[in-house]
Length: 604
Image (cartoon, rainbow, N blue to C red; front, side):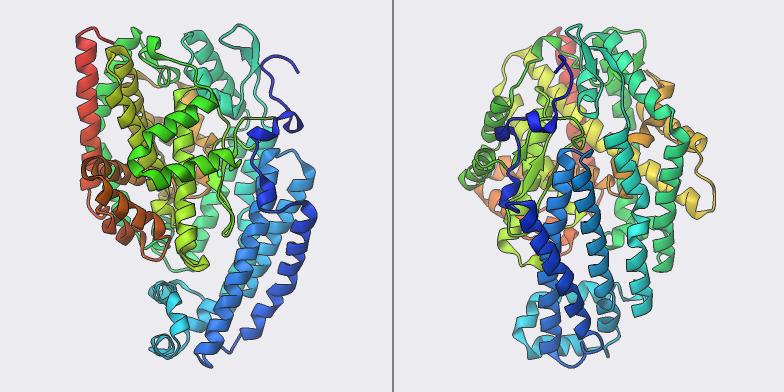
């Protein structure tokens, strides 16, 4: 294999891969469960028209639904995680497509459930709960369903929507295959002077290289490839927005945004409050841009200059084994039990560590109920990837605590709280590293890293959220989202967020075209709200100790047994208010003050 080229999947060390055998020992075992699921789907229809007969029938249906959905989750996760190992693998493309099709059939078979329950005479569910104590576990589920009564269609309508869901997933699926399997980037000169392939996983690493010409070449090379497909990518994005608008309209929501947020019972005001709070602090972001420009000693600060460390002497290569030790040490405030769970995940191959040819880009934590969570990484040996490890293990242990303490129906936590545990881990780790570091240059490096977390998570994700809000509103008004229009909107937002001291390179107008999360509309704002909540929780854990840890664990164990805002308020954070976002941004300002002080004393 040529130096700098990615390994094939079969050449990766087993120790560096996740143990999918913990989910299914073989594809044949998967096929057996696939067959069981196929056969079981029809049994759900036997309850149609009977849910009002009494609490016993309703309970039997719910238990059958839970069992089939739990099995479907295992089938779907295995097929897709095997595909993510190498998205070029035709066998697992087939398994993943079959699993997706079966999920659609299961959804179709269940389509009658909500309309039939909502069609029962008022008070029926409450009476059933009183007559059969075993049904009480479903109280939150029923209450949430009844809350959304006006947005649920009749049986025929729900069955039709379930049937077209697979078609509606088309833009997302096409983008994923294009972005992960088909799109190829050129080979450029790496930091060592050797030819190195630009990849999704290596792109950020290229942008952190001290040699500015390499950063610029990588930046231009990546966006040059996306630019070749700008109209196709605009059509995909437009199609995805259209399908969201269709579903929101059919379900009688006032907007795509309202529809997306209502699933977790989040008021639209929470989304708007985030954007307003961040806009009020944009002068602090502009101040940070000026500081970065001064410390890098450049006449013009370009978009490819945003990720290179401002404190070069503090850069270090961090092998994965060292990264694990850093995470364990930094998360000690969460207690011994949490630490032992981290070690279990490290020892027992919960993690797929390194990039290989065809592997899905990025990082995530995923899994199926009843089996430990899994983490996909594309690990590069730098500080950013250490924090990615801490972040994804935060997701993983959130899932572990939830799975251990909730029945299947409540085990999956809502997206709104999904980023809280992961980002809390990052906040604990960075504070630990800053506080234990006495050498001014390294402290400045770490402070700069923390400031970058604010920039990339709170500011950048809010900019993403604003882009989504603007583009979806235009589509709702009947305007066409052409490539030129999307690029103009995105370029203008970059100008607003970064200010006059940043040279906004034209290439950045295409960044919208490479963001996978835009195919799950109105997801990214939760990185920013989650970051704000995490800063508040990490502060409480540091200052209050064990009592705060126990309250935090109660949140982790909660799954979706309460609404997300109620779970966070139980842990001491009220995201209905702007205050958590403003408090987080005040911490950004505080560390910016410290960075400027170090720079002014020539300690950077």
